[in-house]
Length: 375
Image: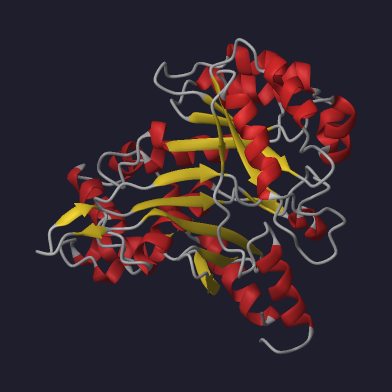
């Protein structure tokens, strides 16, 4: 991106507030009469407006005030890759020139009978990023290659959802599931993530309840405790990936600071909706953690926790020293746990024909730019 444009955008962003970073109550306090907040929220989250001048039911002077002091388009969609399975990966650019990824997953397709009646509507999940880059440095993740640049603001997290819904024509009243497991470690940016949870859940806005929002963490034990104290009502997912500290420290360096025992101790204290379970993400890598011996150890580790294990087959990317395990191995692993009372599923791999690995699309775009093929 041209440096002059980045500089101009930075100057604009420094003088304007991201409108998506305000809760409904904050807008009520800021504008009078209070019902103006409801009108603004409707334009942002029902009509997906990105221009205050479009908000025709607002007084002209209020529209001018909004135009001068706020910004309704803080992210630019740089690139979209769509898979045969209808999953889409988005590359966003911030006003200060950084890029990061988000993903739209179609979990279930719409079913229509022969008379055109809808038997079942689509189900969508949006994986949002919380940081530009990441500090965790997982050995299997491509995001770490680009290093860490900065936290995303709450408004930038929320705007990923509005832009993706708008881009795909997803109706405002259509609920989606939100997973904070894009680029970055959500608990390393807890203040902005927590505020985004609240904004996305606003009844006057997108109305995505907290129980439809899942925060996935690599395991910052003190922050798991802090998240629990906030009692946001979100679901918790732990990126476990190994059953012993030796392997987990190799895969996730953070484990040297917060080992498996410390992480699980905090998970046991976390307030879980009795209808829900804590999700344990288990990235399965060929000949590393895919044996029944690991499954037996996992069963012991999670004893006493209302949990569900989600096996993810490693998504290969260029330069990785790890390999994808066989589906047969994954099935044997899952069957062993399920038959012993620990619910275990194998996540359907999506986007294998596009840049599906985390950070892959961003890295590809960086290479394109460095070759001088994009301004």
